[in-house]
Image 1: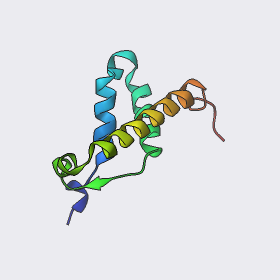
Image 2: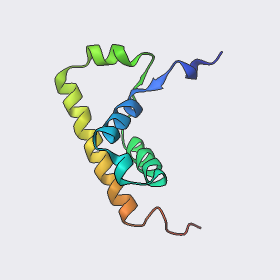
Image 3: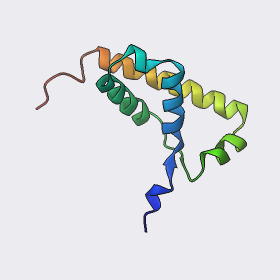
Length: 92
């Protein structure tokens, strides 16, 4: 049984939509975007769903606004981490 094929982290969808809305693919290279995507998601609480449409229908505007703010903060923190050079420093 492969349950993971039917279950998705709704935050991935929302973060990807935000990246698209901000045209990050035009501003940053693929490697930077992958790092930023991971760093952003790691700061957000996962929200696992079977169908994203169910969440979109039932989420209130206040909840959506709160999530959008958290995503914006996580993206900004991701940029800060990547621009600090912390990701490219040598590791032990």
